[in-house]
Image 1 (spheres, rainbow, N blue to C red):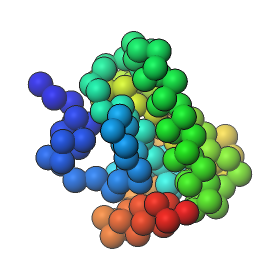
Image 2 (image 1 turned 180 degrees about the vertical axis):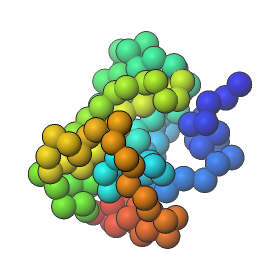
Image 3 (image 1 turned 30 degrees about the horizontal axis):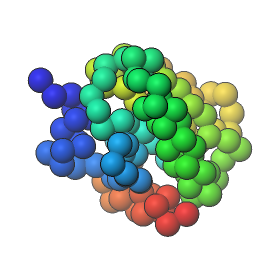
Amino acid sequence: MASIFTRIIQGEIPCHKIAENDDFIAFLDITPVAIGHTLVIPKKEVDHFFDLDDQLLRDVNLFARDVAAKLQRAVPCRRIGVAIIGLEVPHAHVHLVPLNTMKDINFSAERVQMTQDELAELATKIRQA
């Protein structure tokens, strides 16, 4: 059965897309730990991040770097944090999280509540950055 991320990639489930190429897609997390929390996902469905082949592993990081640069221009923050957890969805993915303090990347904390309109507006702002 396809993961929820594969269904997003295939267009079955909508997302607030930030960037996309032939191999990867980046979109806003709908339950962010911080405003601008973005997921970067390879289109190839692989469960464990470190099971990605060498080329895909290298390229996902380069793609994430480009997305992080846009994110940092669009969302006021000191840095963009990176997390690879892999417990939430059985599809390799990278979390990019705008940070001002160490507490901003606490996945156990209460999530930021954003409306679909706020997410759409933020996605546009990041894409244009």
